[in-house]
Image (cartoon, rainbow, N blue to C red; front, side):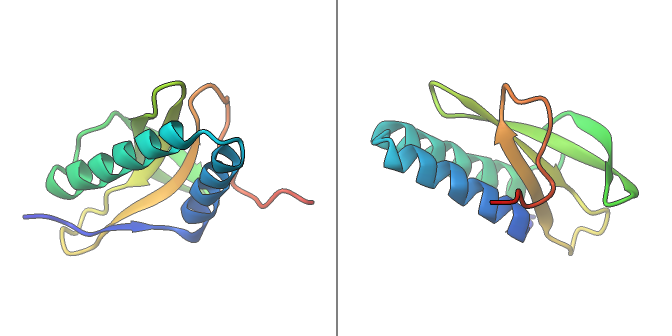
Length: 112
């Protein structure tokens, strides 16, 4: 049985920022590899629920068990944080994404 995979607005915004930044730099192959790795991740997540290491995280004051999936884009790695709800009818939620070398996830919109 496959599950839907749904991205939160935060995840979608952060991914779009990364893609836009690297597209502006002209890193076409890098963006293509990132997109290919992303598609592969979504296919794997929808088929297999628990394919990544689990971590306990506090998200908006609530403790949940999330999983971390590494996207390989060649020159850089990206770490995706996602949550698998206990009910199989609910979709898997992509919570956040960051560059592999960064220490923390950005949970708030940065002031311009």
